[in-house]
Length: 283
View 1 (cartoon, one colour):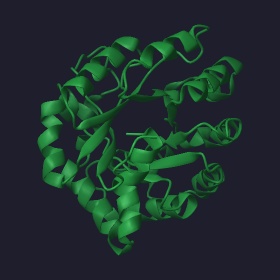
View 2 (cartoon, one colour):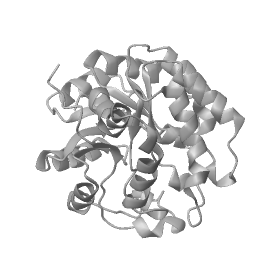
View 3 (spheres, helix red, strand yellow):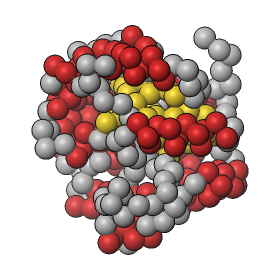
View 4 (cartoon, one colour):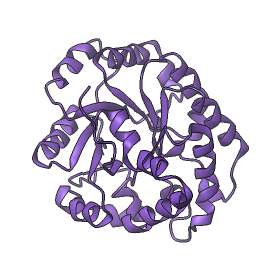
């Protein structure tokens, strides 16, 4: 295990892309502000202004060409501390592909866009689970990108791999714009949090709220639930930049979470704003 500086501030979730209207068709009319390129030079000064030392770069496209692009970005910029890529977990050649990525020290884990799958329980399919078992063998993490209706499957999924590090992206995207904290989401997120190998990113929340008219006090109850469920040693700060820009600037989101954690201890704040991500991703 390398000597980790757990006092660094880390944004555990952000993206880069060269915009393509076909490849990025998920960016709809309501999100038109992010229909353009977002590259490392666009983010670096923002992180510096916020006092953040580095970031974890997360895949957008589900291709290995995406991995090449993001690993190239990471190789050129020291502030990119790790990459979460994509690989076909259901491929019979999964171990061969993971062995290939071992040559890139900044490749830390993988993600599949489960939230967009027709089969809401895809994560429970034998072929998918074989892929997760391979991740564990090679020491890779796995980011779980889901909607609330998939939390029940996620509980069974994460229980099947107690030694595999998992992190739930964007607190599983509860329906914040409905302005009601659903009991179903609370119960389900608490159930998943009982598995100590599962972490949670406090990120991506403003884009699940009313994009033009959200208020911090509407988001705090969701953060309360996550902090109570996971504790301060299994939560991470993430911006979801540049996706967050459809609802808030980087500074607005960072200020919101900074204000929320103001009353926590120095140790707890250091863990949330960097230490937990550094340990989870082995940055």
